[in-house]
Image (cartoon, rainbow, N blue to C red; front, side):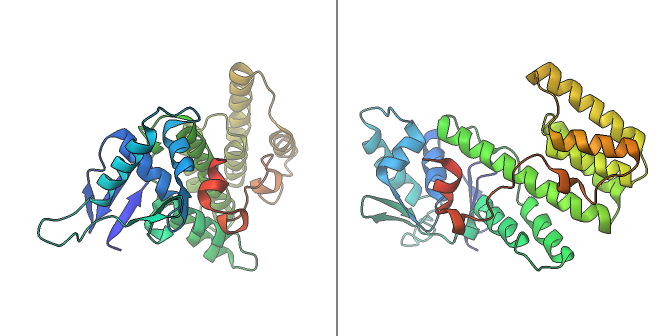
Length: 280
C-alpha cells in the first residue's frame, strides 16, 4: 500500500514506508475528519463542525479549502507530475478522501474486530483477527488534537480497543497461558484503572492461573478506586464474578459477566464510520 494514514497516536501520513509531515494541528484535524470516512464523501458542514466545532469562525470554509489544497500535495515529489499526492476529491457539497479504508489504521481495526465477531468461526481465527487489530494501535488516538469531535472519537476508539482486548483475553485464557494473559491485562488496567470489563477479565485470568487471592485483591483495589474517584460501587458483573471466585465457582469466562453492553459489530451495520463513531 503506497499511502497509509495513522490515527492511533498522532495523525500521521506514511508514504512508501516513510512518515511525511502532515502539517500543523488544524490541518491534521482536517485530515483526520476525512480519514474516518475514507472512501465516502463528507459534507463541508460536517468537516467544519469536526474541526472548528458548532460555532466556527467566519473564515472556516476558506481555511478548510486551504488545508485540503495542502493535504492534496502531501508527499508530492518534485518532477513527478504530482505523484505522491493524497487523493482528496471534490464531491457534491463536500470532499472525499479516495483511499481504501484499510489504508487508515483505525478503520482497518474496526473491520478486523467486526470479522472476529462473525458467528461460526473457530476460536483461533477469532484470536488471530483480534491480535492483528490490536497490533495496529500506536498510542492515544488523534493525539495532540483538541475539540469535542476529536474527544468523542478518542473515547469511542478507546472503548473499542478495550472491548477487543477483553474478548481476546477471554479466548486466550482457555487456550493458552492464563498467567501471560493476566500480565497483559494488568498493563491495560493501568491505562484504564476504573474500567470494569478489564478488571473482570484480569480477575478471571488470575483465578484460572491459580492465583485466586490476587484476583480478590484486584477486586478490592478496583472497588476502592471506584468509590474514591467516582463515588460508585462496582457493577453487577464484577460483583458476581467476585462472589463466584469466593465460592470457587467462577463462570466459563470473564466476558460472560461483562457489565458493559456489547459495542455494535461493524460500521457496515450502522452507517459510515464517522457517523457511527462520532455522532455528528
